[in-house]
Image (cartoon, rainbow, N blue to C red; front, side):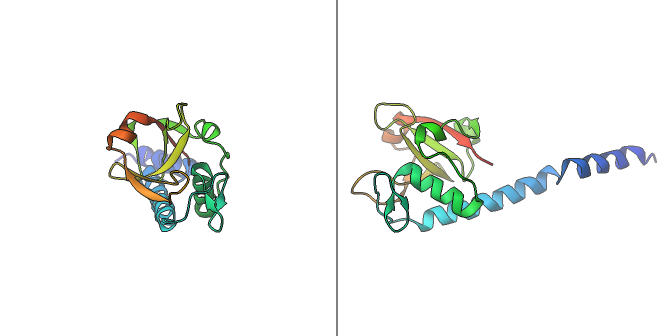
Length: 152
């Protein structure tokens, strides 16, 4: 048996970092932590321009806070700027932790949330509301969906 292909494979895996399955498992674990933290903030009030648990959050402040606290990633402050971060995704590619965008103010990418799985996302919706999980299959969200991004 020729050991060269096996040695070459091992050398390539070592040179490239962890095998893809391990990288996926590590990413899934980080994103599960992110989703759990995001959901733990449910009932925090909406606050225009807010970016803290104490004062409340607007949608982009909420997303930025969650990513900073869990993954130590500093994201842009506005939904428009967030819409250019990471890799674009099709809906069929969504995984927990991905950013989902909606047109809720007659302009693209005016609202953002965090995908939690099973066609649901968590977000800080609007004045007078609190952070909550929503179903993306509702007509309101389906008709306003703008796209998604994956931030690693």
